Image 1 (cartoon, one colour):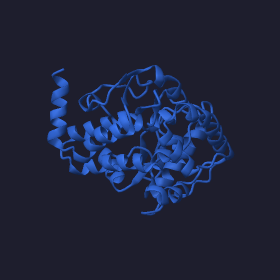
Image 2 (cartoon, rainbow, N blue to C red):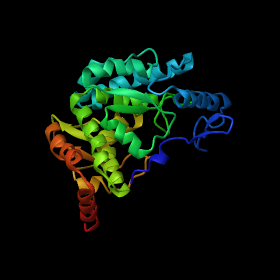
Image 3 (cartoon, rainbow, N blue to C red):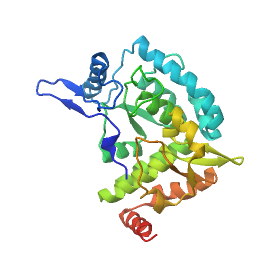
Length: 296
């Protein structure tokens, strides 16, 4: 089951207004005081930004270097592993390859394409708030970058995941509509159990979804297409058909490569199964699907 708290380092604000990001014991930046201070500084900028504004981050040359390296290393893997719908969207969005973009600049490119924009988040956004914003075509994104000692790895979503993964995905009208539909679904749900079910279907589609194209399994999920390791491994994992009961209940570990992925036969099937689910799901349907999974 999806657990939003596993994804992000906790952020706290002290009585004196000091913002601090608390990295996990296994985080590569844990013992780097400069990195911890930088993370806290960027989180504070998001927390203290006036309502309706996105803070401008003065990225360092080291941060630009990490972005350049990731763009350079991801590009050939996208050409090899990504579905053509993602590749076409990536071509339309034209993210910079030489510097970390400001979120407002990404929004300015996205809005004419699909009407989407970004909002800065210090870290974890409560599940219902995150999905409600998706329903309004707003994506909450962190602004920090991964630690420089492991530039091709991050234990939590950074701006590379949020923009190179989700930004390129959201430049596709088809994928943007699915993401918006997931957000709108959350507004119909009363129970947390149903909300978790929708989040798990989203995980196995918009985050870790794969799809057949010309006889090959290609990736469209942002979690795969922003991860060097996932792109190398997803073709060797178990691929199941789109089964909503299975997608909404399968246990998984977000810290490991996903051993089971759900593969659509085509973009049309993705719309017909996942899209229709997001468009119509209510508490009763989520309950029935969960009960169906329990009887197998």
